[in-house]
Length: 152
View 1 (tube, rainbow, N blue to C red):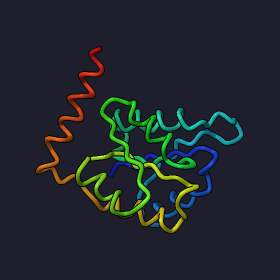
View 2: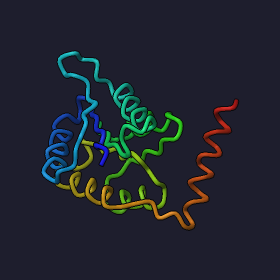
View 3: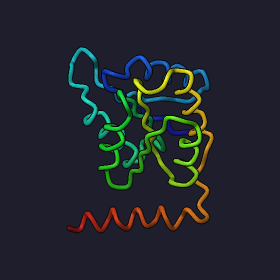
């Protein structure tokens, strides 16, 4: 099993640490891409890009990104070709992110959800797999548009 990639900006360090501990309690390996807090260079675009790029390079199958709202992390991660990141603040969205959209990354907002809900969301996402079926052509079309945009 490849480790889960995780990263957080300064607004979500505490929640990230709780998620890491939660994953470790479940014997799920985790690699933390959060920049050293003392270096003060841990702005969310850099962190999100590092995690998304590591997934693109197949160092990880999945990643979790955390910031104040989850919005900025999602925007940046989705700039990396081949990456599908989904902002999730409930378990249903987390499940559908995997089952319908094959999202390799979820983003969470530390200022939006609490620790226990965040753990439940992460669990729901990790326990879900892409179902293919009617969603497969839609995910393929996402790739088509992504590639078309890259040719401009």
